[in-house]
Image (cartoon, rainbow, N blue to C red):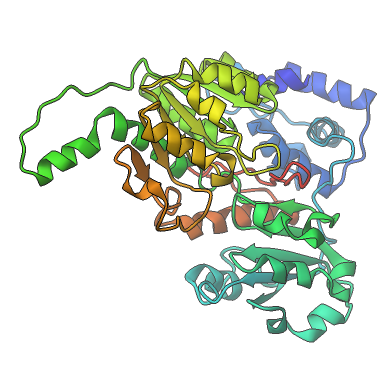
Length: 463
């Protein structure tokens, strides 16, 4: 049943009445208690338009529409009984919430949540936090008591110390992770903390704090907010090297009319190590240009749909041994992994030395995932053609680093995702999570934002 639902989601086909009835029957056989929290959790976890529409009709289950594929895009609404609705949502929830995974901590109706925003002096007066604290654009202020601070002293003592039994949520908005950890030690917060959210996609800076890592409180992040920009930058870096853009700039500066052959991306192979949300954004754009795409991730089973739909040609389990084997036949190697103990120096000397002399390494993941000394050596000896690095092991890159002066290196100073709307994008992701937290329908946009409604971080895995 799980595999079939994933196929439906990947191809975006409408769920038939017959299949919906099957799900209902399965739910009757294995009933699951239905709560607003479980409904939200199911909808946030299952990438299925049917499930999201079911959630939207939670307030009026008798008007729940079932969708038939023969309608060619037109919705065929079939009245469903309350029991059918409950059965369908129960089934969806059961499949979306593995045993032991925390559900969305939806607060009781009418109870106000205390939201503590941990930020920095650079952002405290920014447009996004102003909108968050003074308008109802992101959240209804009647449902949240919002406090913003850069240090623990900035938060009212009565909020941190005095217990009013109201649920507490923390938003990390580019502040000091230690401050967030210190807030967790305060009595009222310790007792009532229900949810933590990071405005960044990467959370390794937060998980360095033991109080955050060891907390049983769900931590969500901004996964999906910046994937489109990183996908674009990756393809831009392919073109930078394939079209010899740097050499053209040198010729222009020297006023030399230089004519030389350039490459085509069509037919080239790109390997994406870390085929998650960012990796998929790279794949979509690479495939559109006619490239062959190979994915690698910890669980290749999660990408069966993308292989079947031919978005990617193959997906392998990401291990150092398999990575070493696969890079030998690829023209571009994109690293899009988060930094975890398992991915530290994942791109090792052995792997770099097994790459083609004409290949290019692209890093949109984390600098700590690369053996930088080995990378510099293979670049210096021309064992690979070049490297496009949005991230480096130490940031800012030390002035003495050889990478600064290498003509076959393209640096972008961790700005690949720093778009004009960077902070607006992550605020929109937080807004989606607020809706899920409140047990409300989540507004899904049709643009480049590809963020889950409730993206729970696995603190052990690090992402």
